[in-house]
Amino acid sequence: MKSAYGVGDSDAITNRHLSILEDWSDNDFKYVSENGNNQLTLDKKVQDNLLNVLTKSPANRQSMETFINSDKTNIDRTNNDGSQSVTPNYSFLRAHDSEVQTVITRIIQDKFPDSGSGLIQTTDEINKAFEIYNADQLLADKHYTHYNIPSARILKIRTALFLGHNPR
Image: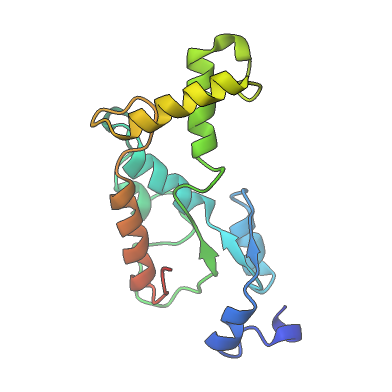
């Protein structure tokens, strides 16, 4: 990518030729870095931290310290002086299939135990699961859906701005 399209020569050229790798392994961040940073890699550890620190129920939430001093990060945030090399990456809180699918599966497992894994459901079961999902999003004390989506999004944007990235 770098040599074929001039990726890295300028932000304008690079932005026209972004290659986004939907990888789900904690090892991919290191792999992409060691192979020339020629594509954006999913920073699964950031996604996991956003979910575990901000979106879980208060009883199951991890400390913000997890973002800073943890083996659950790809970047040493105790030393943000600009001296670290940066691996191009992205993360998200929810997507069309990530997290929503997980929550719907859990609802089906809880409400329709005869559906097995929660991934083999009837149309009626999936419709009922979405009714439960939609109602749960509106609750202050949620049983299934995520808490603090706005806070997690703000932290993601703030981090991107701090690192000099456009958080679009």
